[in-house]
Length: 303
Image (cartoon, rainbow, N blue to C red; front, side, top):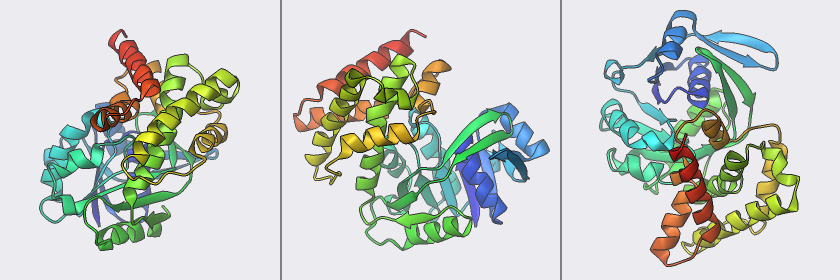
């Protein structure tokens, strides 16, 4: 299968590398010239548990050089989904599938405005990766990947992608209701990302003070109420589950925290911000998420 990965950060590079190792023809597309040059010259260096290996694949800063692909995977930050959707439209053509494994909510809908909605697949992954420098990533963790059709009720296309991923060692399941899965991941991000970004703490430090734990719980319960109003089934213990995820990833700095550390635009609009937007549409309050969104927006406006 020919695959194009739009957004060759740590996660995009990891998935591209794993698929290339399994024999797929993979193109990485990214604007970071130093990374693209390093991959083309030296290969993608993947570090895991103190060992490194080199994967050969193609990379480019110019998506026009990439021909039609059977699968396009979108891994850009949600702030760039609109541009990525236009690139995906050209590369996927009429028959190619487009998969988003991005953080936040709204990415699949944005892609479906450019690509045939029946070819859009969404999902989440618990794989972890860190960018170590141009052409080099650390494979930080393995976890479940779940995907599903965003609009089409026929799961055959998603099952084909899941089988392809699983053959490459990325164990992947297909969900009948992928919106529930995406909301589940969103609730985790809602309870961790903005708080850690604003305070400078690591995920595990959310647990240190009752006040911080309560803030996380309140943000998650805010968002869970919005999900429930849309008949999205979320687990009853979701707030406690989010804190357990924070504990399990205790040494990590959240992606939003890393964005703030590096003075980059965050994905706040697609995480806490989308909860606020949906709450407004439904005539519901979401005071905790509204406050967190405003604080992060203020912070990033004054880098």
